[in-house]
Image 1 (tube, rainbow, N blue to C red):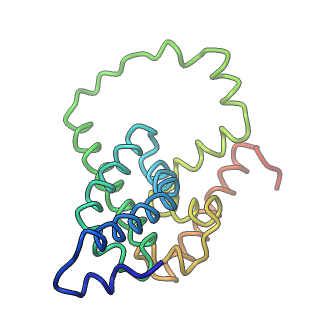
Image 2 (image 1 turned 30 degrees about the vertical axis):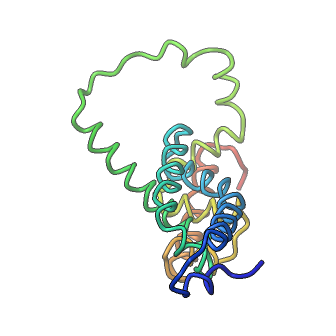
Length: 188
């Protein structure tokens, strides 16, 4: 496919050139949308909020589609944008919850047999333990262990230095292991 960036440099962008840009942009979004969602979900820990984060990112990226198709690594740029949007959503949720009353409504469904069985499941424990990590550690651990990204890719996607990526991975793995040992999910 001809790079749409060369066409953009010309003063008269035709409809055909616009179609090329749209096709290229669509293929980028199609290839990375699931990764954006999984990253957002890891940061915000709520499926609906993660969908909202991805939707916000897609709306913002639509306005910059000509720029995005010309980037060296559009997925990294979109992942970074998703990370920032998800963190912004977390911050705004904290502000909202701080303003709300402290009264808790009892959850009558919390003790259903299904939920009790799920709570005893090892994966459920690990997922719960992951939520105890700081957002940056959780995100880096997810990108490395679930998405299979290399350190350099994580660094580019998160706007962290390579040393920060390695440090977050080390600390995150260490904390998860300590929590697994503490809850006797794994043996020493």
